Every structure is written in C-alpha cells, then in structure tokens.
Length: 473
Image (cartoon, rainbow, N blue to C red; front, side, top):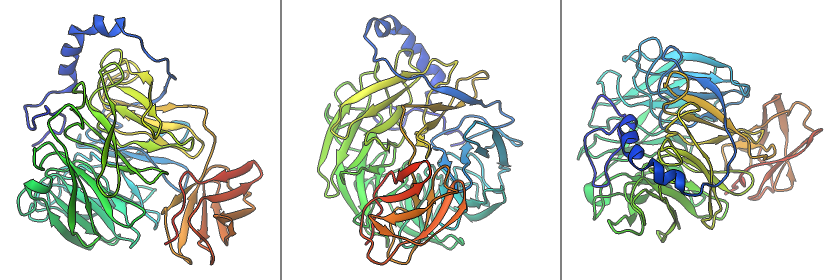
C-alpha cells in the first residue's frame, strides 16, 4: 500500500477516497449546510503554508514542544526526495526542515514525534528501511537522525502511530500490519534501539491499529484497533508492559457507539479515557466517547456533518479542563472543523476550514505552554499542500512535565515559557531541587514526601501550574 491517503468506509477496507473526492459529496448538500445554524468560533491564523520543498501533506501527527522552546513535526511527503520530512517550528511560525527522508532511513512518516526524557525525539515511518515496511528512528533537536529499527513483517509492518515513553523508560508503539496474523503488533524499543515484539493481534481482539498507545495512571497501556473484534469495526484494549492484552470493548454496527476508531485515547483529569470513532453513531459521521479503565463505554457526542465528520485525531485536555480536537471533514464547507467539548460531553464547534486557510485537519491539536493551540491541515493553503495554524482561546500559560509520573528521586523535565528567573518548584506543595536550563526548560528532582498533584513553578510573571497532575507512584 504505497499511499496512505484514504478515508475508509464504515464497513472496513474500500478503494481510496481522497479528500478531493469528498468535496463532490459535500457540494450536493452545500445548500442544506448553509441553511443550518453554525456556532460562532475563533479564527485560526495560518503560520506556515507547505509547498513540497519544505514538506507536503502533514498527516496524523501532532506537533510536539521540545526543551528549546521550538516545536517539531513531520510531513508525510515532500522534502528533497518527496518521501517526507521532519521540521521544527518556532512559536512565531518560522519553519526549518531538519531532515528529508530518503527511503533507506524511512519514508512517509505519518505519526507524531515523541520527546523522550533524554531530550531526543523519536518517531516512526509507514514505509522505507531495509525491508521497505517502515522504521523507528530518533533525531536530535538539531536534526541528527539515527535509524533504530526496520520492520520485517514478522515483527510488524506499516507503522502509523507515534510512540510513548512508559514509566519504565522504554518506548511503546503499534504497527498497522505484520506480526503472526498480519493484523498488526504491539512492540517496545529502548531509547538505545533494542527492539522487542510484544503482541500480534488476532481478529477477535482487534486488528489493524492506526492509533498509538497511552499509559494510564494505573500503569496499563491502553489503545484502540481500527478493525477486528466481534463485529470487525474496532475495539478498545489494554495491555501490560509485558504484552498481555485484554479487550475491553468491542464496537457494534448499531447507531449508538460508533465504528472504526482511528485516534489514540487520552486520559483526562477525571480519570476517564476519551476517544473517537471515525464513523457510526446516531448520524453515521463518528462519535466521541468516554470509557472507564474497566471497559464501561459511554457515547458522549455523535457528529452530524455541520459540527464535524470523520474525527481521526487524538483529543487534548487543555488547561481550562476542556477537551479540544479536530474533525477531518464536515463543517460549513466540508473541509473539517475545530471543536471543544466538556468532559461531560457538551460540544461547541469553534471553526470550519475553507481550503484557503487549510483543509482536512487530520492531525490533532497541541497546546503550547503559552496557552496557544497549534495544529496542521493535511491540505489547503496557498499551494493546497497543507498548513500549520495557531488558535487562541484566551487561555493562560502553564508548565508541562516530561514524563508525567515518577518516583521520588526521579529526574523530570519541566517545559514552559519565561522560566529563566524561576524562584521555586513544588510537587503538590513539596519543594523540589531544580535547575534552570533555559527560558523554556527546567530540570527538577521529585522530592521526598511528594504526592500526586500539580507541579507549580514560581516566576516573576506569576505562578505557573502544570496542565496535568504529576503522578507519584
């Protein structure tokens, strides 16, 4: 499968239906769409327009903030060899291409990068490498790339998802194909590159996962499979760090819970896991759901085209306590939307893309530590090659910890803005020893007596609070 650019029918595999083709269907109903009331929303600002040379078609990946204050991302195609790039972006929108893939080191990077605790960035490619079936790589913030692993089908193939770093320090991910049954795998790899295949999916438990994994506060890894399960329309599962998998929920083909989840889950501050399905639900255009770690699922919202269609990106919980996300289609012109939703399920459409400002925001949003959201669109913009945009919802600055959990004595990176004159760092009220690395990064040690709670950083500009509680086992 050379080209990942496709939208699948609810029943599973179907011929490629590119975003351009979706517009024909939208045009037939455009009069109805404009006759419907639209929620007023904010207006994003386009900060980068891709033009093939600097990248082309940013896909599933969200941007990630690094310790130097810049953000990093990937484009699925474009660059010097037209098989994808890695770029960095300043908060002001200045883009630098750091690496152009050349097939030998990977090609077609679709997922997000991961900032690991060692300061390097890790990612995956859909194809390329020694077997042509995808790679795992690391890259320094300055742009020095090292290929760590090439998939060979037995250990996985065609990796769409990004990686996570678990509390044991290892990196975990999924592949869409490969493994014993050619239905995908779960793997781990050390930061140095030692690879272990942990699990091969069987159809009954889930198959062909697009999404990556998350680690919840209970220590388990959680994820979604696009297909498989009793009805072959996807599952939610949990897995131990050793690879023992339990299917928590199997989606149905009814009009209730949705079908075919693309996106990774997110654990919100209330302890529930939140995710989306790309189709199904009351109107057939996808859903947002919550699920307990034990597997009790609640459908919170069914999309109805005008408020979005075909959500494929991971949700993000912002520092106002709401979830923010995108849909790859729907809205006023069929080119995708941005929305926010309370944890209880009340959804507000914030913006509909119109091609000139971007189209098909398949990648999710990232909240930079100054409070502003950053995102990408797969197409649209001046050259129809995709964009990077910002969105301000008036939210204030905060700090982010890397990782989000650790035992007493563990080293923690704290990312933020204007941190140079920091006077104190506390973990849920307990003072910590810290070192200022620069205006965007502090390192700290989890202090004796620390308990689970927010990290607070005192600066001359005010007190900055972490966007998520830091978990102390």
